[in-house]
Image (cartoon, rainbow, N blue to C red; front, side, top):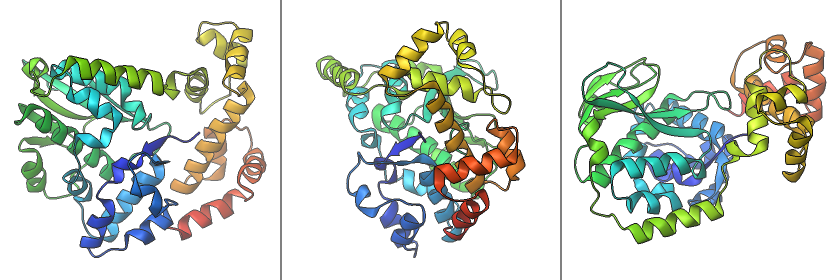
Amino acid sequence: MQPLIRTASLRGFSPLVSELGGDPDRLLTRYGIAREVLEGDDGLVSITAHDQMLDAAAAELDCPDFGLRLADRQDLSILGPVARAVRSSSTATEALECAARFLFVHSPALTIGVDDDPWSRRGVIALTYRKQLAESPYSPQAIELGLGLFYRMAVQLLGRRPGLRSVELPHGPLSPVARYLDFFGADIKFDRPVAALCVDHRILDASFATADEEIRLAALQHLTGSYSDPTRSMTGRVRRAVGECLPGRVPPLAEVAASLAIGPRTLQRHLVVEDTTYGRVVDDLRRDRSHRFITTTDLSFTQIADLVGFSEQSTLSHAVRRWFGLSPGELRRRARLSR
């Protein structure tokens, strides 16, 4: 299954597009997102479609800082049920641990974490923001939206600027550097390996005025009881194990079971409980990756066949017809016409 993201991430999208002279309905339709699904925060849309739409809006509206402008219209509340647990945490460390643990509720394709400072500065840490690129292509605007919102959440929770030393972006400048300096108020470093906010490590000990242990425990209980991380399910673990072998041969079930330190029959039983099979997991993974490569890249179909573990292009063609009722060429043409 392709990774999804809650529609809360598009809060403010339609008004912003309209203010810039664009037609939000046309963009939504082009990327297969129903306007009515944006009426609430808890709808789910493809994160690939979500990200491609942000990039398209920025390009068509000649608004290179589109992601940052959208971040300016959002706050911690877009995390929905996760926001309650984060806001009631006692320290920044507790809040980060909670957000990292349950960010899958917002989107399983996104992760945050705490890493060493990439520049080895004394007393500095990196708050990282990542997207699983094996499941969905990179989007500069979506990264700027996410990192900009991450920064705004920190300011909202701390009530002040979070000791920001520098900002790391994996792409080159989309806007004049002055725009980034105005938004973040700190040095910006481009073409970096990972998106991150580099901050004074003492921020981790900062306490929140909104701390409430009773509310936090109730929120955690709700999250634990109501949501399960799809990446930690057996289906998710198998999908990830197979995906890491591509391009290349698809490993047999026994080999994947061994990599997960369980027996083949145990693996099969777990998948049956999750209403799937090993063959179906592999087929779904190939379908999703084939669709992404065909519709979002200019790779040849022979290259795509290799990337998804097919030995011949003809095998890919037969599979694409089975999945989508179209040839690879027709699927690519339709995708390009809709842009």
